Length: 232
Image 1 (cartoon, rainbow, N blue to C red):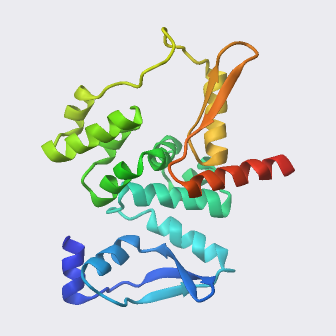
Image 2: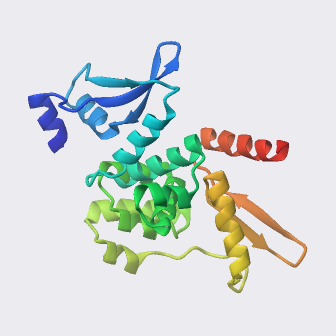
């Protein structure tokens, strides 16, 4: 709200960064918060810098620079890491090196993109904090959405939310403890596909692998990556 009021009064002082996508279209690279605030302020146009699609180095640097902002929204941060991974084939270790952020912090941030869209929207708007999101990510989808609405309506702190959350249920009578090797494989698979992946080992020779997605586009991206791995 403060940014949109400032933009309404003074205009956009710092241009957003875009690149051409063909057919006269443009894709936003950096400045999503300014763009949203400008729309809220009723602006029809705003200053842009157009980055050449071939100039991958400057595009990568712009994304990295944007990730250093102190006012970065948790979802903006997660999407920034995801773009570095998808568009520049950077691993979480690579991203850690170029941004100076801990690998575990990057992994936790990217997992926010696996949350239901309703929770992602609340995070983006600032109604939920990153600490709330970590709690919600460990819950069943319906329980997480219900608690998210409760957090917003009651103004619950992260500590309050942690005290009231319902843990994920298990179909098996007894909780299975995964060994470290299996957890490492899950993490590597999640990193490769860019989406949370889980392995349910039912016996030494049987089990199932599940991959989480929250939209049709994400599903198509996962399928494309799996088919590409098959070709390789």
